[in-house]
Amino acid sequence: MPWVRFEDGFAEHPKMLAVGPLGMALQVAAVCYANRALTDGFLPRAKVATLLDLEGLADWHTLAKDLVEAGVWDEADGGWRIHDYLDYQPARDDVVGAREATQQRRSEAARHAARVRWDAVAEARTDADGDAPVMQAHAPRTAHAMPTQCVDDAPTPVPNPKDQPLHPSGAAPARAKPRRRLPEDWKPTPAHERLATELGVDHAAQATAFRDYWRSEGRPKADWDAAFRTWLRKSAEDRRPRAGPRSRDPGYDPGDLRASADILRAQGR
Image (cartoon, rainbow, N blue to C red; front, side, top):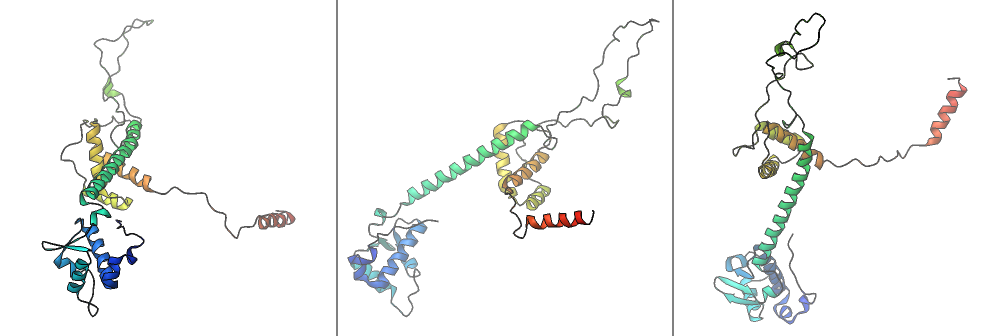
């Protein structure tokens, strides 16, 4: 939240004493407005009329005239300008530049955090993001069977790959999807939006970070929709607070447990 600067002797300054309490209140409201709107001290005439509710107290035209006569405000086209405003408050260009620099630092930090996090995910080669090693669908074929020594010199049968199950379940695995880089037109699906809502993360912000990261990395994947689901789940895990040590129940008394054990022993249990 932005702040404005006033000297600690502001209320006792001769100019403030000259304009009175209501003039000083209007000056404070004017400085706050100029700082918030980044006007470098300019006060539009229409805006000054709404800075304070002075109904029944004073006329804002009179207060503005008093502030000009006291040297607090200067006349300007379309309104007034606060005298020496930039000696105490930051200029518009400085504020905008600082905000842009802050946003740039935050964006770079977010991209770095995403890169570190997803480098670890990529190394894990999980099935969810399509990086699991795929079994060969067919065994390599040989032109001739390798000769073996047999008592009856009978030829050694060559197993037919089609007759051999290539998966513990007995069924050959499905053919692997082709790996490709993130498409330019990729975007989250409605299913992604529902998953993000369930996990409590912003799907639009996560999608932007996801695209920025993987387009900068340039590595291909087989299933980008699955990769984004994993991204959302990992982001939700990172946001979840870590569980701290459990506190002992205030009503717990170790003596009660010992007493119960003594009763059971006395009953022969």
